Length: 226
Image 1 (cartoon, rainbow, N blue to C red):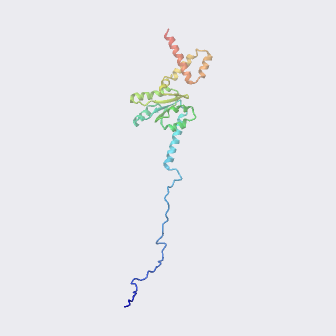
Image 2 (cartoon, one colour):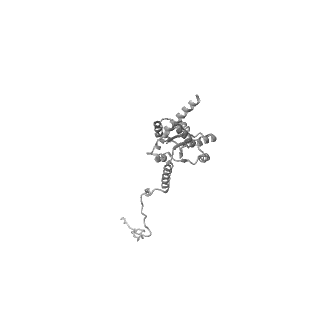
Image 3 (cartoon, rainbow, N blue to C red):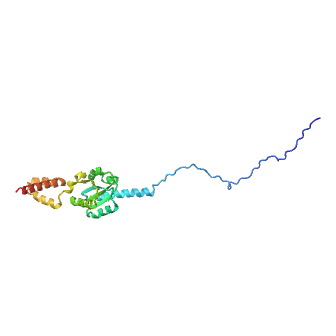
């Protein structure tokens, strides 16, 4: 018996690939960019304001140094707002108290005789500008303030006539004679030979004061021995 193979057509239609028209407006692909950090070309407003304030502070210090006889630093850390306000009110008009960063103050005094104040450029300080020859009278209000308010903040140093005075040297500044005392000593020095007087007058103010002080002390001793 011979078998016959029968072939039946497939029920599934043959696969045909149809091309659908694409609409570029409906299927637009978005370009992909690698992420990167942008750097602003201009400095920020905050940085500009900060730079301006620093420049103003340096200019303020330079202005205060005009006609300034003594510049002293006071330890600022520990002051309350009220204490600092009271201190400012207690100072005479001839003195000015400024709070500024050490770096800005040094920038203003660099290259000047006031640069001798460099040892004070540590910690936070307030700066006392004295615009009078009466140095003891200018220092006295702060000493009074220290006692009344029981404030431990002390002077960290000062510069007078280009010389640096450390905290332990302030007695020399506080014991300087007043202008009236200097006039009195000058009158007393007239009793000396003219050459000695000229030499005394040509000496720096600090040496003049010390010389006259020694002379007056000598007169007092001589008067006491009579």
